[in-house]
Length: 279
Ligand SMILES: Nc1ncnc2c1ncn2[C@@H]1O[C@H](COP(=O)(O)OP(=O)(O)OP(=O)(O)O)[C@@H](O)[C@H]1O
Ligand SMILES: [Mg+2]
Image 1 (cartoon, helix red, strand yellow):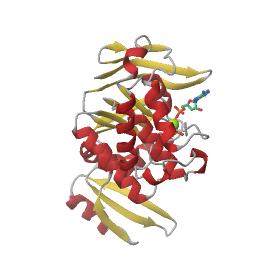
Image 2 (cartoon, rainbow, N blue to C red):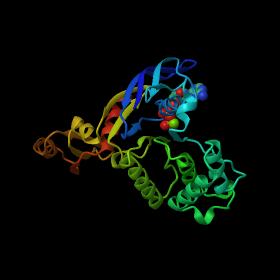
Image 3 (cartoon, rainbow, N blue to C red):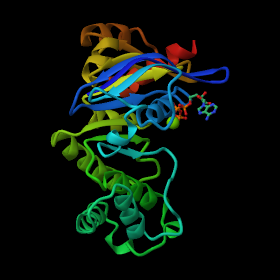
Image 4 (cartoon, rainbow, N blue to C red):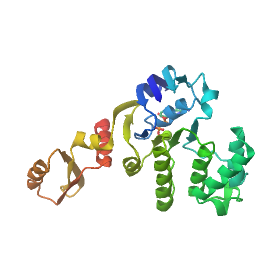
């Protein structure tokens, strides 16, 4: 279990994470959504012990992340937001080298590398140096690298940026499977449909704070299951959310322009949350 208790982190004047508390039970698939600069990456960097918090405490399985970092390392896999590959090494060498850093047995490394190359559809490119990979292939290799030691907890910071649709769906399947095998996963993403598809729970974050943390369907119920989408004065698309279809219809009847009534999505929740933040 991951426990974040009253954690804060500032960079000079910027309070990147502000008195945040969150508990992530084992085998949860948690999504962390928030606009640019919300503090998502800062939180992940504290969760993996890369930076210390200014205040508060983070524990993973009752171990303090900043103090017991070495013993936790084997349990955790991280896909950072920015490319962290050794660009002069080949795909296979990058993975093998990561396995060696975890002091894994050579035979196990070899088996695991072959498995992950296959899963990520990188077998054909295994001898290519990383600087010659496409953007999406680099992302896939980063995910493979994070999984080399079969970690129990996986943090992914915008893992699917630049990955094509087919590969993204394949990665979703891999992550879903790992989660149903009992792994705990925390993912940040700007692709809301990714969070809606994958996550049991979603935390909405802005300015260093978590405002809501619930299942996607409860978050949708919170703003209203039915959305009326309409074009106001032919210049701006507007959205209004309703708890019942009847009330949505009553409202829609009063609109002079074109409108549609549809099911609310997590994207609407995020949009209305972000909109409120701006006001
Ligand atoms: N090393 C740093 N030095 C100074 N300020 C930083 C540093 N890292 C992050 N910040 C600031 O902290 C705040 C939170 O940044 P963070 O990278 O955690 O956001 P994020 O939610 O990951 O955003 P994005 O969606 O753009 O990746 C921002 O205002 C950012 O400018
Ligand atoms: Mg970030």
